[in-house]
Image 1: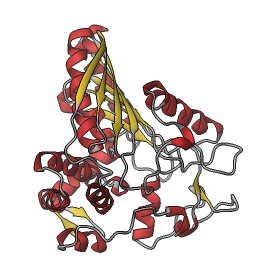
Image 2: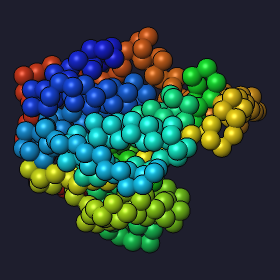
Image 3: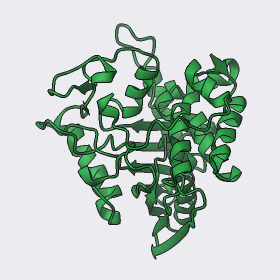
Image 4: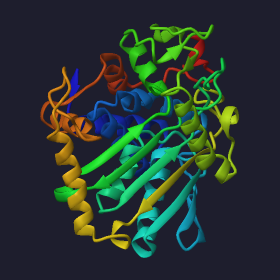
Length: 349
């Protein structure tokens, strides 16, 4: 069914506050989740709410974290998340990175000990909205089979990038280093749909179209995606002194414990490197060049990165956001969670 962005945000806020999250933090988490659903990235939207609620109730997401910013250099800082909601910590850390980059031209801010933070494009767009370049990487629990291997080691380890053009437009790039993130498997399960065989493998290492038989995700482009996953893990895990690789805390493990995840934001202020007006004009020119290219057979137009998501977001503002009935019914119910994720093995379902 379809709901407005405003109603969906209200429903998510309500459920998170019922679980014990203060309203101001629930509002930020809800904003990031609705942002994802509105752009068609349902793997990082309302489908996550029940999991968050159960982890909050069990103590694995700290509902009252003591956030702290540690300045470690003129252009560097560490944001200590105290295993609070990942979306809140990541947003506040990006705010700090933007503040530093305004002063020094570049900022690197590590986000230390947080929970799952959702769609990274939300945070890099924070930078682009104030005429800066945003880059963010985040580690995830082991679900991806390494190139040439048979068992998961790295997570989906996403990478996001955004750069501003003219008139508030921007290029936005957000990808998992696997063919698809785990949330896409969850989305397919919730809809009882099959998946392309290129996405994942079963317990024998064979490609599978059945989302319920998935035991590992494939890296994009084989060894190249495997290398990118390694890079993300080093920058957001090893660099911050956090668990790394197969040692990263599982998404659905012991929900009474914090996950100690890491994330890294990089913000670049174009005004320190070139004329800002020219920079934004050239980004807009890039967008126009791509849109004006001759499309390949089967395509109506060449889109610049993020253009499709932005179009879906505009459409959702006019026609509402499509939400699976099961998720909507949960959101409007009095049930906080169904005790389904504690020590749950998603691969075993």
